[in-house]
Image 1: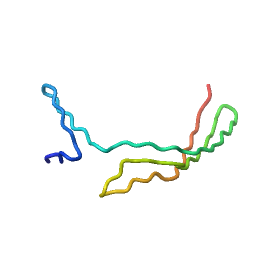
Image 2 (image 1 turned 60 degrees about the vertical axis):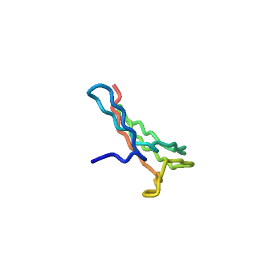
Image 3 (image 1 turned 135 degrees about the vertical axis):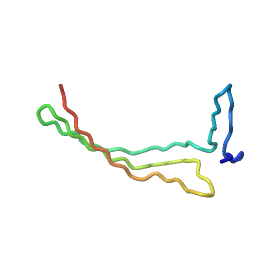
Image 4 (image 1 turned 45 degrees about the horizontal axis):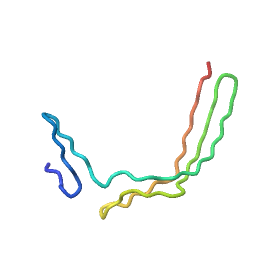
Length: 78
């Protein structure tokens, strides 16, 4: 497959070739709330995050939007 030169950039260095995809990246600011519960030597945690603002480099083919996310953790404390 030949890369599209409008969305990619190819850099060659000796035997190595690197293809960079342009218009990627972006940033987001997330509001976060969480809870940690300690029981003996264990810690159980849950965290919720919601995007407050987001700027991703979307194009005509796709609109990129981040959604809400949950994370959980279980930790054994030495």
